[in-house]
Image (cartoon, rainbow, N blue to C red):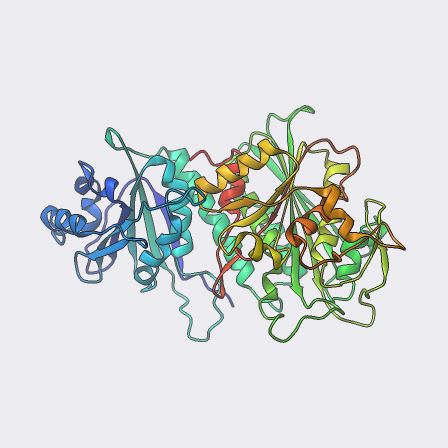
Length: 506
């Protein structure tokens, strides 16, 4: 059984806080915000409900903070109260809020599993990134240890923006937006952490149903599932052949948010997620050290499902579809073989030269369905697609491939604003698609040169299955490494999608 060790909730104010004998309090923010006039008054109910931390102690602790590369922490009341400073040292390709330092400051304190209040003070433009980072600092939901606690503790995060005029307050709508973001990140982390004997394609479809049955703001949510033989009959040769060897059949799940005021002219956006619930590599099987961790190969679908859940809670000013391409790349007597030639929904034939290059096959079907059936103006696909992503953009920045410069730049800005960082890779399909040349089919599924910008090549393979008349924007995000930190899921991608989509107004 999974557990939920923490009930995290965002608030704009500290309400009826008990003394520090029964809970903890941590104040975290930029040095400028912590030093601003009125700061102690804003946090007093959290740190000093019964006289525990005086204004003198608080001010002295703030002055003692050093803005090192990783921030700093000064205890104020044993282990039960501390003030923490987030560094402002930042290069141009990092988020100015430095959310990457928050977990190192906060994790050990909230891991005590004691009720706590975290007060965040920062510039308004930093709220989204730092709030997402605090969510990631909380103990993860998934835990199957026999000793795991079944009792949750409460972690209240009070967010206080600090402007030129001093302390400000979040609106009710902004607080609701942060709680929706939190729900999306929590779901994403839990799904990515779950092993396949707990969460296969059946389990993912149950998660889809759960999201679709929840209340939506300003619109209605519906969903559709195409599964098993229907996948094959509809010509989705990529999704079918990748997943046909597994006990639980492959599926395409489509969630739809329809605004209450939608018309035929309402803008439509599609998010398409790679949902390989386990990737053995197929007959091109992975090694004993390369296979562990492949439960996370559905990280793209998990992030899109989490972001859709948050979006429907906040409300979306356009029609939004989330398509999850769900399959298990397994080994069986009927498994797809190298040398097989398969036909994707696009009608294009693919000579399989690597069954471990399966994500692009399911996404090829996903983006074609999105473009031809749902008629969007923007299609985004998100996937833990290639090991080459790490080589191209590193462990913290996802690789971004886009057919439109303005859209590309908007996603880079959204990444810098939320801490879900992306960095553009080379967009040049007329060169990179040559790497998939086949003598007997329209293309192979794996590039012929392992040293030739493989993250770009893989993305262009997906793009090649868009209809020829598709005139909209296409965004590909390869988040193979940002999906995890150590052996735990990060919830990466939820905040990025909400910000880039104009849904989270923070």
